[in-house]
Image 1 (cartoon, rainbow, N blue to C red):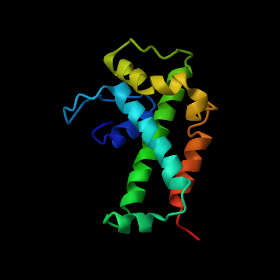
Image 2 (cartoon, helix red, strand yellow):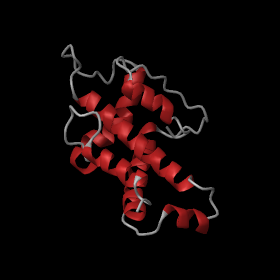
Image 3 (cartoon, rainbow, N blue to C red):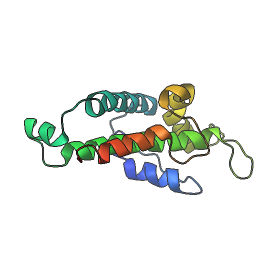
Image 4 (cartoon, rainbow, N blue to C red):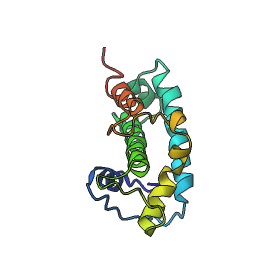
Length: 153
Protein backbone atom coordinates (compact mmCIF):
# COMPACT_ATOMS: atom_id res chain seq x y z
CA UNK A 1 0.00 0.00 0.00
CA UNK A 2 2.79 2.42 0.85
CA UNK A 3 4.31 1.85 -2.58
CA UNK A 4 1.20 2.54 -4.65
CA UNK A 5 -0.28 -0.93 -4.44
CA UNK A 6 -3.85 0.13 -5.18
CA UNK A 7 -4.39 -2.38 -8.01
CA UNK A 8 -3.49 -5.44 -5.89
CA UNK A 9 -5.78 -4.13 -3.14
CA UNK A 10 -8.63 -3.67 -5.63
CA UNK A 11 -8.04 -7.15 -7.02
CA UNK A 12 -8.12 -8.63 -3.52
CA UNK A 13 -11.26 -6.78 -2.52
CA UNK A 14 -13.17 -7.86 -5.62
CA UNK A 15 -11.93 -11.44 -6.07
CA UNK A 16 -14.18 -14.17 -4.67
CA UNK A 17 -11.33 -16.01 -2.95
CA UNK A 18 -9.43 -12.92 -1.68
CA UNK A 19 -6.11 -13.99 -3.14
CA UNK A 20 -3.60 -11.28 -2.32
CA UNK A 21 0.16 -11.21 -2.46
CA UNK A 22 1.53 -9.02 0.32
CA UNK A 23 4.91 -7.68 -0.76
CA UNK A 24 6.87 -4.52 -0.07
CA UNK A 25 8.27 -3.75 -3.52
CA UNK A 26 10.03 -0.59 -2.34
CA UNK A 27 11.56 -2.12 0.81
CA UNK A 28 10.48 0.87 2.89
CA UNK A 29 9.57 -1.45 5.76
CA UNK A 30 6.66 0.73 6.85
CA UNK A 31 4.44 -1.42 9.08
CA UNK A 32 1.03 -2.08 7.57
CA UNK A 33 -0.85 -0.65 10.54
CA UNK A 34 1.17 2.59 10.31
CA UNK A 35 0.44 2.84 6.57
CA UNK A 36 -3.27 2.30 7.24
CA UNK A 37 -3.20 4.96 9.96
CA UNK A 38 -1.54 7.41 7.55
CA UNK A 39 -4.14 6.56 4.91
CA UNK A 40 -6.95 7.29 7.35
CA UNK A 41 -5.41 10.63 8.33
CA UNK A 42 -4.82 11.65 4.71
CA UNK A 43 -8.44 10.83 3.85
CA UNK A 44 -9.59 12.99 6.77
CA UNK A 45 -7.38 15.81 5.46
CA UNK A 46 -8.90 15.39 2.00
CA UNK A 47 -12.37 15.60 3.56
CA UNK A 48 -11.51 18.89 5.24
CA UNK A 49 -9.16 20.67 2.85
CA UNK A 50 -10.44 19.50 -0.52
CA UNK A 51 -14.16 18.93 -0.08
CA UNK A 52 -14.90 21.67 2.47
CA UNK A 53 -12.96 24.40 0.66
CA UNK A 54 -14.22 26.39 -2.31
CA UNK A 55 -10.97 26.24 -4.27
CA UNK A 56 -11.19 24.31 -7.53
CA UNK A 57 -8.72 21.59 -8.43
CA UNK A 58 -7.57 23.62 -11.45
CA UNK A 59 -6.66 26.56 -9.20
CA UNK A 60 -4.75 24.27 -6.83
CA UNK A 61 -2.87 22.69 -9.73
CA UNK A 62 -1.99 26.07 -11.19
CA UNK A 63 -0.84 27.44 -7.83
CA UNK A 64 1.37 24.40 -7.13
CA UNK A 65 2.60 24.01 -10.75
CA UNK A 66 1.08 20.54 -11.02
CA UNK A 67 0.00 18.90 -14.27
CA UNK A 68 -3.67 19.08 -15.19
CA UNK A 69 -5.65 16.40 -13.34
CA UNK A 70 -2.90 15.78 -10.79
CA UNK A 71 -4.93 16.72 -7.72
CA UNK A 72 -7.97 14.77 -8.88
CA UNK A 73 -5.81 11.71 -9.58
CA UNK A 74 -4.26 11.79 -6.09
CA UNK A 75 -7.62 12.41 -4.40
CA UNK A 76 -9.18 9.49 -6.28
CA UNK A 77 -6.22 7.28 -5.36
CA UNK A 78 -6.66 8.11 -1.67
CA UNK A 79 -10.42 7.68 -1.52
CA UNK A 80 -10.30 4.49 -3.62
CA UNK A 81 -7.73 2.96 -1.29
CA UNK A 82 -9.86 3.95 1.72
CA UNK A 83 -12.91 2.37 0.05
CA UNK A 84 -10.96 -0.86 -0.54
CA UNK A 85 -9.94 -0.83 3.12
CA UNK A 86 -13.61 -0.58 4.08
CA UNK A 87 -14.48 -3.46 1.73
CA UNK A 88 -11.79 -5.63 3.29
CA UNK A 89 -12.99 -4.60 6.77
CA UNK A 90 -16.49 -5.81 5.93
CA UNK A 91 -15.05 -9.10 4.64
CA UNK A 92 -13.11 -9.60 7.86
CA UNK A 93 -16.09 -8.84 10.11
CA UNK A 94 -18.71 -10.77 8.13
CA UNK A 95 -18.69 -14.59 7.87
CA UNK A 96 -18.26 -15.94 4.33
CA UNK A 97 -21.00 -17.73 2.38
CA UNK A 98 -20.16 -21.01 4.15
CA UNK A 99 -20.53 -19.42 7.59
CA UNK A 100 -16.81 -19.45 8.35
CA UNK A 101 -15.39 -16.46 10.18
CA UNK A 102 -12.18 -14.75 9.07
CA UNK A 103 -9.18 -16.30 10.83
CA UNK A 104 -6.51 -13.64 11.28
CA UNK A 105 -3.77 -16.08 12.24
CA UNK A 106 -4.46 -18.72 9.58
CA UNK A 107 -1.74 -17.40 7.25
CA UNK A 108 0.66 -14.50 6.86
CA UNK A 109 -1.66 -13.06 4.20
CA UNK A 110 -4.58 -13.06 6.64
CA UNK A 111 -2.40 -11.48 9.32
CA UNK A 112 -1.39 -8.69 6.90
CA UNK A 113 -5.02 -8.09 5.89
CA UNK A 114 -6.06 -7.97 9.55
CA UNK A 115 -3.27 -5.47 10.34
CA UNK A 116 -4.46 -3.30 7.43
CA UNK A 117 -8.09 -3.22 8.61
CA UNK A 118 -7.59 -3.39 12.39
CA UNK A 119 -7.91 0.38 12.87
CA UNK A 120 -11.11 0.46 10.82
CA UNK A 121 -12.55 -2.39 12.88
CA UNK A 122 -11.78 -0.60 16.14
CA UNK A 123 -13.45 2.62 14.97
CA UNK A 124 -16.24 1.51 12.63
CA UNK A 125 -18.48 4.48 13.38
CA UNK A 126 -15.67 6.97 12.94
CA UNK A 127 -14.59 5.35 9.67
CA UNK A 128 -18.15 5.42 8.32
CA UNK A 129 -18.64 1.65 8.14
CA UNK A 130 -22.36 1.22 8.77
CA UNK A 131 -23.62 -1.72 6.69
CA UNK A 132 -21.35 -4.75 6.32
CA UNK A 133 -23.51 -6.20 3.53
CA UNK A 134 -22.91 -3.28 1.15
CA UNK A 135 -19.94 -3.31 -1.19
CA UNK A 136 -19.38 0.46 -0.86
CA UNK A 137 -20.23 2.40 2.26
CA UNK A 138 -22.19 5.66 2.01
CA UNK A 139 -19.15 7.68 3.07
CA UNK A 140 -17.09 6.16 0.23
CA UNK A 141 -19.81 6.91 -2.33
CA UNK A 142 -20.07 10.50 -1.11
CA UNK A 143 -16.29 10.95 -1.37
CA UNK A 144 -16.18 9.54 -4.89
CA UNK A 145 -19.12 11.67 -6.03
CA UNK A 146 -17.60 14.72 -4.36
CA UNK A 147 -14.30 14.24 -6.15
CA UNK A 148 -15.74 13.44 -9.58
CA UNK A 149 -18.41 16.15 -9.64
CA UNK A 150 -16.46 18.78 -7.68
CA UNK A 151 -15.61 21.26 -10.44
CA UNK A 152 -18.77 20.74 -12.51
CA UNK A 153 -21.21 23.62 -12.56
